[in-house]
Length: 133
Image (cartoon, rainbow, N blue to C red; front, side, top):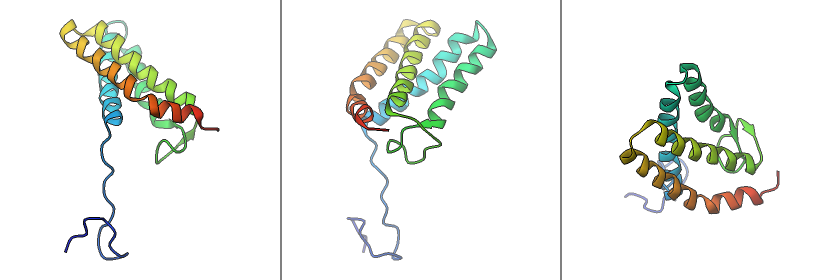
């Protein structure tokens, strides 16, 4: 019989359940995807090197830098305000890149997505900013 509570004795099968997808996490991820596409796209006309650098920064910095307790795996530990700043960078890159590279019909939903992310991130940001390094 399946164990719906996920509390089977050790060694009797998988008991770990996947963490549920939370709305703030989903919105943040979607906004990151927009930033990863829109910002380099907007910068490609200026310089392919600048476009590549933007992509490297937008993906690389949040991958390497993390606040302990916010991610399961931390490569370089940083205070909470750095993590908040990185999310703000992603939001700004998503909005600015969308408006610079895309028509309004695509930039408006990207902006609404970033605004929704900004609102849903507030509890996480309060927790990150209140934590002592």
